[in-house]
Image 1 (spheres, rainbow, N blue to C red):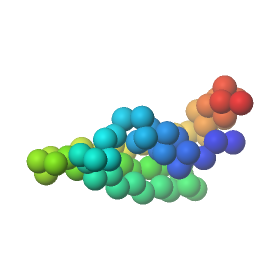
Image 2: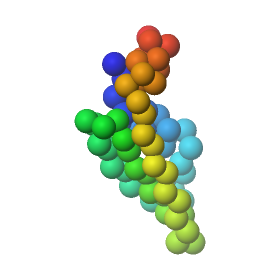
Image 3: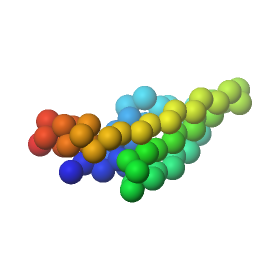
Amino acid sequence: MIKIEELIHAYIHSHCDFEKEIVLTNYFQADWEADILIIDAEGGSHEIEIKLSKVILKMISKNHT
């Protein structure tokens, strides 16, 4: 089964510019939850909260293999 940190890693590496943004992440593996905080060069911030169900994770894992 795919792990929540693998999904977050893939997301930030495809959507974030590490030269212009600070990216902080926090995972809650037991609940399949994650938080992403992105701070840009001007000090603006965006918070993304993700919560996946076991059913969704199984579907992702099945399609990912």
